[in-house]
Length: 272
Image: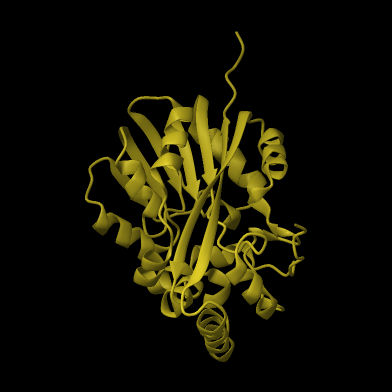
């Protein structure tokens, strides 16, 4: 099926540093967590017992929780929104966790890490500068794992296919491209990794399917950056449209099909 073109009017990357802390509970309740299968794939690739890990943009801690459930010796979380950083520190009183209220570029987490992970956050960072910093903090042979949840997939999700014409003129996050979610394109991210000097590139997509009622679907969309920055009247109108589509076209329960691309690569090991 041919993708329906979307607007290429995008939010500035700086928006991501402060838009999500305005409603921490709402974000956390609405978003999909990270499956055991996905986290298993990351740690199988990393293949380092008691790994030292950096997490970029942990937000409310959905991925942080999954990482702390694994055999990690240290986790440094880089969260530029002070509200979210404070939330993380309070939520996870784990001695292995250090929370720095800074973004990746300005932070100084140290070096020699086994794994750098970012879940639904790396699109808010300039990719060239971000991957250069990732290489600085990784040990030779260390792994990087970038994962996203794509919630808006008109080719496979009939609810979003019905909704997305109503998003015309709305600036979308920088994870969106003219023909859909850019990080579902393995070649694009593989090329980005290769340009940064990363190697052993792997790619996988995980899929989550659920049914949401009108209130749940509104809560999900209200957690998205591009909705949170809308003027109040436009935001309210969009919520009314979502409610109408779920109620009238899906009899009160609409599908939400989430595709989760995972991109893996390694910092090169110097040859002898």
